Image (tube, rainbow, N blue to C red):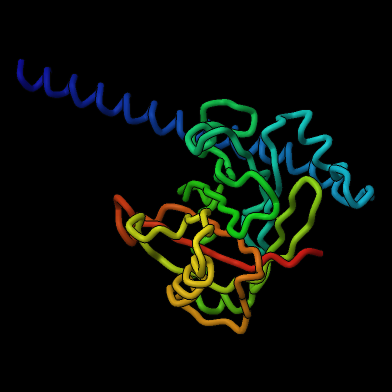
Length: 240
């Protein structure tokens, strides 16, 4: 009797585990499919010209899909080629895709505190997904060879295009407040730049001053610290 009961329990556990794995795989496939769809929309319109101050044609089309799409990020030789979302908080797109569907992978999203293109530190977040999507490939920058061969990547907003010069890459925890956006106090930004440059695992020749704008990319790093680990890439914005 006990053996039959144990066998029944084990069967239920196996069935549940199988269902859970299937659900995750199905969701990942759906996520990859809809990301491919939005990439086609972006790529089709990206080469079209527009006036200097107007919204780029690509974003006119993207905003028809979701008005919360605020930008695009692409890093060579990675899977990172995604729309950037932004809501009124940092929670919604942590758990929703660009179609506003609940999704484990969430979206790449901009910190809700970033409200203008003149801010010193624009912050983007993304999950470190096991299927290699979202910001998982950021950790390629832990490899010195990759770091040296990929000194720049592209960041687009609705009206501007930037080349980003990477100057810092490091593992840290949430105890280190690298997501600062308020630099109203004298020397605050200069001190911040000094600190984050010192954090970098590798050194670069990129010069960053308190007159420059930067972008911060942040993802989880459970290998560094399971609860609070973060991997961070920071770069200087150079308008094209």
